[in-house]
Image 1: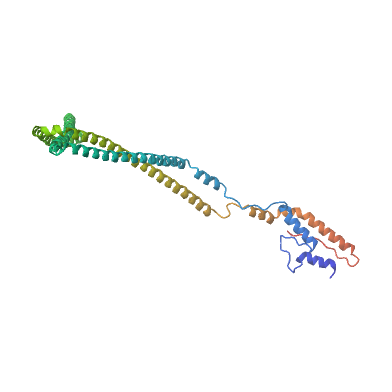
Image 2: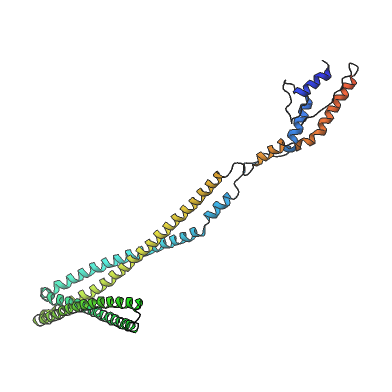
Length: 354
C-alpha cells in the first residue's frame, strides 16, 4: 500500500483502528491532530478563566434583610428598656426595704426606752387604745357598707324604671305582642330582682357594721372613764407609737408600689423576649421553606455556566469555523501526493462528514 493510501487510512480510522464517528473530524496523526485539537479547544475557551461555582441569586440579600428585620430592633429596644427599668427599680426597692427595716428597728428601740420610763401604766392603758383602734376600723367598715347600700338602692331604682318603660311599651303594643318589648320586660324584671337582693344584702351588712361601730364607741367611752388617769400618763408612748406606725405604713406602701413596678417591668421583659423568639422562629421557618423550594425545583430549570460551555462545543455551528482550516490541510496533503505522482495515478478526494 502506498503512502497516500496509508495516510488515507490514518485519516479515516484515526490511527487506532476505530472509525471516525459521524459528526466528528478524522485528522492525521502528529501535527495535524494537535492543530485540530488546538483549534477545537482554543477556539472558544482560549483566554477564559475558570468560572467559580454559581451562587444562589438573592440568598445573601434575603438573609441580610431578615437579619435586619425592624421588628427585631424594636423588640431589642423594649428588652433593653425593660432591663434598665428592672435594675433601676430593684435598686430603689432595696433602698426602700432597708429604710423600712431601719425605721422599724429605730421605732422598737425608742418605744422600749419610752416604756421603761413610764412603767406599767402602758399596759393598763393598752385596752383603751386597742378599743380606739377597733372603733376606728369599725367606723371605716360602716362607711364602706353605707356606700354599697347607696349603690344598691340606685341600681334598684334604675331597674324599676326600666320595668316601667317596658310595661308601657308592652301595653302600647298589646294588640301585636311585640317580642322585643316582651324580652325587654323580662330582662328588666330580672334586673329588678337582682338589685332587690343586693339592696337587702347591703342593708343587712350596713346594719351589722353600724351596730359593731356603736358597740366599739361605747366601749371606748367606758374605758376612757375608768382609765382616765393611766391614759393621760401613757399618752406620750402611744402618740410616739402612732407616729412610727404612720411612717412605717408610708414606707410599706412605697415598697408595695416598687414591687408592683418590678413585676410589671419583668412582664414587659418576658413579652419582649417571647416576641424575639417568635420572630426568630418565623425567620428560620421562611429559610427552611425557601430551601425546600430550591431543592424541589427541576434539575434542568437553570443551566449552569459550565453546562452552557459544553453545550456550545457540542453544537454543530462551532465546526463551521474549522472547515477552512481542515480543507487547507487536506489540499496540502493532496499536493504532496501529486508531487509524488510518479509512483501512481491515485487521486485523493477529501470528504468531511459532519
